Length: 213
Image (tube, rainbow, N blue to C red; front, side, top):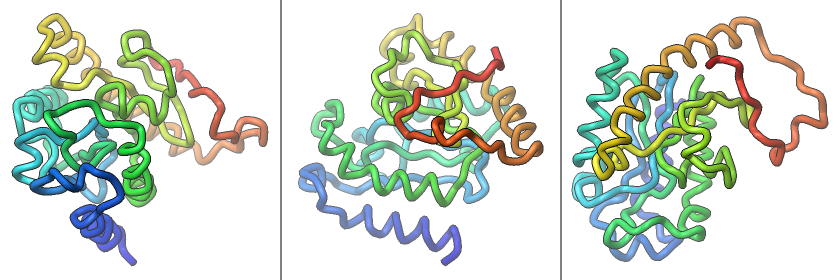
């Protein structure tokens, strides 16, 4: 099965998923969208009102800010892939519950495995937790780490910049680092895979800080 077929299969499963109670209130599930050859995967938290109506990620006000941020580093939506940790809208845009995140986790893991992005950008603390555990976003935002074989950057959710004006410039500055991290990822890939000691292959190992910034 090709990468495109696999992503379409995942999207079809998401569309009819009933693994958690979020399916009861959704208008449309939001599996994600973007380039099959994306070097960068953005992972948000969950669909909001506009996303639930359209079945597409980041199409509301936070999505407009994300478009602006992408434009600031000479990227378009069609250059990247965008998804969320939960694929259906939580009621009243509340935070996703642990069981809801667990229910969707297989879909996200399969998307990551198909896309094999060079860089994963987590948007918000719920997607951050998948790669960075209980660390605080205020402490690690904008920093590149290597975790589970991927280079990951934790960033504030674009919605945070809309709700708290002081974070808008923080988010803009963090986004400027993305091209540098992609370039570093490409350099590391060109050097070939690095054999890690068996002791460091444990998924519970903390993320490895990269000396980029």
